[in-house]
Amino acid sequence: MHLNWDFSAVQIIWTLTFAGLLVLLVTLMGRERTQRFPWFTTGIVLITIRLLASRLLFGRLAPIPLSETLITLEAVGALVSLVVVVEMARRAFAGARLPLWLVNAAGMVVVAGVVIYLWGPWPAWKTLTADSRLAAWRLAQLVGTKITMLGYLLAIELCIAVLLFGRRFKAGWNTHVQRIVIGLSTVAISQLAIQAIWQIITRTAIVHSRAEYDRAMGLQTKLYNTSSVVYVGVLVWWIVCLWIDEPGMKAAGTSGDGSAGDGVVADGSAEASTIAELGEPSEASAAPESPVQPTKHATEEAASEEPRIETAEAEGTEDRD
Image (tube, rainbow, N blue to C red; front, side, top):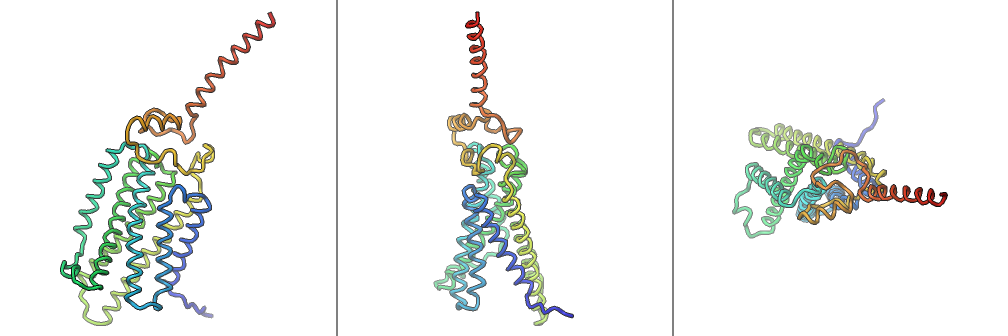
C-alpha cells in the first residue's frame, strides 16, 4: 500500500516556517516579551508578511508588480534587521560607557563593510544608473541585498562579542538576549554559507546541456531548503527560550521588561543615579554574582530597625525599674 503524498519538500518547509513564525509571535505576546524586544517582534511580523505575500501573490500578480512588492518588503525587512541588531546590542551591553560602545560599534560596521565590498558581485555602474524603471528596481534590490548581508555580518560579530563579554554586563547564558543573538547569528551563518557555496558553483560550473542546467537548479533548491530547515530550527529555539523566564525574573518581582537597566550610560552622574535607584553595586561594570541580591534600601532599613529594637527594649527595662 502506497500513500498518495502530494506535498513537495518546499511546501512542507514553507508550512513549518509559517507555523513556527505564528507560534513565535504568540509566545512573544503571550509571555509579554514584546515590550522588551519591540523591534525583534516587528522583524518577525515583517518576515511573516513577506512569506505569506510570496505564497499568495505568486501567480496572481504580473511578474513586475510581484517583484516590486517583494523587493519593497525585502528592503524594509533589511532596515529593520539592522535596528534589531542595535536593540540586542543595547540590551546585551547595558551599562557600558557611551564612548566605548560607539567605538566598538563603529569597528564592527567597518569590518562588515569591508567584507561586503570584497564579497561581491557588484554589477556595472551603467546598469544601475540606466534611466529606466527596471534599473531603478534593480538598484533597490541590490541595496536591500547588501543591507541584509550587513545585518548578517553584524549579527555574527555581535554574537561573538556577547559570548566573550556578555557575562560582564547583562547578557549571560541564561538571558533571553544572548539566546536571541545566538539564533540570529545561526541564521546569518547559514545564509552566508549558502550564498558563498552558490557563488562558487556559478563561477566554476560550465553548463553544456539542459540536463546539466536542471541539475544545477536542483542543487540550488536543495541548498535553499537546507537554509530554510536551519531557520525552522532557530524558530523552535526562540520559542522554547522565550517561553521560559530568565532566572531570578519572578523572584525579583519583575516582568522582565528590563526598562530600568537598558541603554548606554552617557556619563558618570547618570550611572550613579541609576545604580542608586536599582540598589546595585557602585561599579557599573561589575556583574552581580547571583540573579537576586538584597537592594541598598532594604539593607539600610534592616540596619535602621536594629537600634530601634534595642531602644525599645531599653525603654521597657527602664519602665520596669
